[in-house]
Length: 401
Image (cartoon, rainbow, N blue to C red; front, side, top):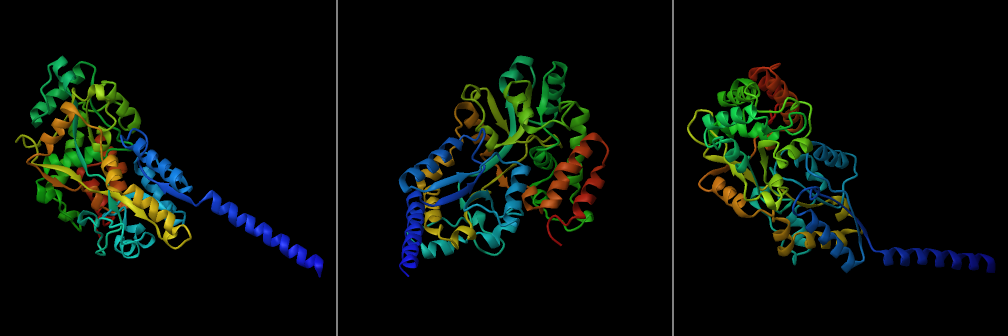
């Protein structure tokens, strides 16, 4: 009897020691974001996580990486497998976020339980079910980046209209400079959006056809423009097999004169180049100057997952969400680090133009990947027609049945 009592006491002491040890070590939280790589706010994000760990005694295990299709797919696959993180920075109010909604917590629910947080429910991130799940961090925009000093050096006209764009392509090709850096194998996204802007008006760009017969003629023309640019020598010979990190290096090393890209890319431009790199709106294919629209919006934010909410990690996860979405954090995470003439050119590009959301953001995953990663490379190579491209995409009901 005494032996049993002694064993029970020892077992209780072991269990208690385990609980005390667990409490002393704090809570372990898992996070995922795209504040990584060349993103100007990557260091700020890590600093916030480190400060949170220091102040709370909790541990954050972060798996952030640069945003691309592989990163998107890995996030969605983790959610599908029930391996989602506690805090996620991801896309919102589009086809990408739809599969997540049952596994993340609406902001109204968090605000109800933690009213002191007052998390912002931004209308731009409201989902089709009427709820908002993500706290917005930064807006984005897309445009045509150019090395203005290269244009001056080789006497090429700045791409302010379609004729000057084609002439600049001719000049740079003749001088051994890649006119436009692009990877058709993994990130043709910006090229796809820009050629749509070159050919479509605002109403057509925002169309959501149900069948191939309803696809605007301007969308067909846009795919033909990709072939036209390829035949004009706009892209590197290996554009169909290279990757974005290589094409970005070409632009940053001034081996390429232009690049279609977005605000994420702008933050990677060295300060030393910010007075010789400018962003231009997309020239119109009909020759009438530049588009009166630009691609942009607020597409990403911080989520709190149900996995964290329904666990003993709830309070710790909510506190981390609060840290990441405080006014100071949002201002610092939203800072793209632009300065000088580069910032001024971005302001000019956006001023007086209507902002339109990316066409791809409205597509379901299968249709988007088919359009971007299968059709566009084939159209560029001349092995698929514009009509075949959109028939293939529309067969996947990109905008719903």
